[in-house]
Image (cartoon, rainbow, N blue to C red; front, side):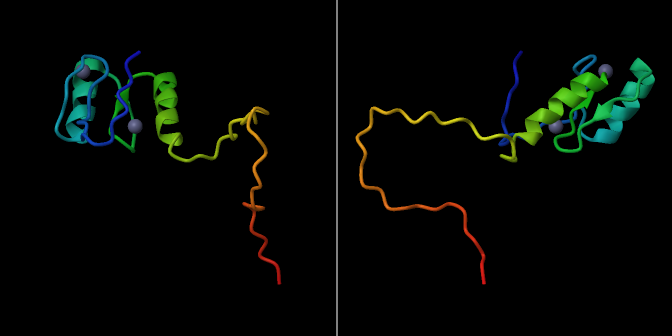
Length: 97
Ligand SMILES: [Zn+2]
Ligand SMILES: [Zn+2]
């Protein structure tokens, strides 16, 4: 599993069946139709084409990680730290009247 998570480089639409790269997405789709007789699942985010839906669906998780709407990690407060006098920082802002 080599997942290159790089947003800096623009990735060309790549055929996951044979590994061929194409300049535009239309060529990739045409290629898949002609060569592989399939209609690939194309990621609208990065142009990646997957043959199988399960792979495509799994790939979508990469983009879903952009939004930190997942459950926050349980931060275990170690009791080692000495209780410093912290000012009350309330993250929740109540927009009251
Ligand atoms: Zn191909
Ligand atoms: Zn993608």
